[in-house]
Image (cartoon, rainbow, N blue to C red):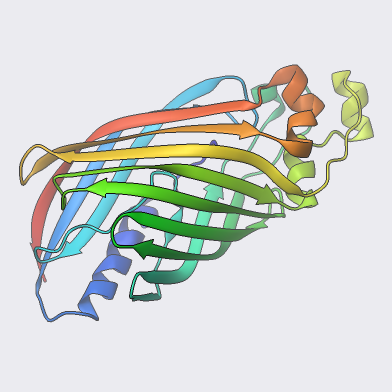
Length: 263
């Protein structure tokens, strides 16, 4: 799924949130900060049959010698307002890139850049399983509701390595699906495809896997792979059938550097 970053603020925001969360729970004045940079491939837009290359970044903060908290590669930007006994919840945000007619290759109608805001909740069980749900409302752009349910099986040895894999279910309302998969009568005439008005429901199922590995205390690597398949009304869309693909694949890799920060 094609996303874009919220700019420099997005880089600082999770770092600040993690620092605030840790500071509330400890008197320690040392933080370990891990910054990763790399590259990824992802679909040009939702339902596209072509991929594009973009930047991949990651930033994590841990208190003292504690291990970094687990994050799946497709988690959106979030702040845990509550974090206790494996439960976490709070606000979540995402910025969904626009889709232009030239991206599709036909005048099917554009979708403006959408800021999505909502909430997440998750439960992590014994560092081995994580269950997470998100629900976000589009502000501008598609103007719809979109969410996901995810389960991750986790294998880790502290921060030496962390490997995860698990299924996802993606769902949305009719506004979201009409924006990306619907065809208005006007677009039908212009693009030469049938008019189409999808409803809401599950629009995709997916599987995501992530890996991080530390070569030493400073340097490491990280990567991910994700496969998504459109289903339901989304899969029946003439836009997907004629100009795109039900199969959506993304992957990326990068290097990381860890340093200590005194507060």
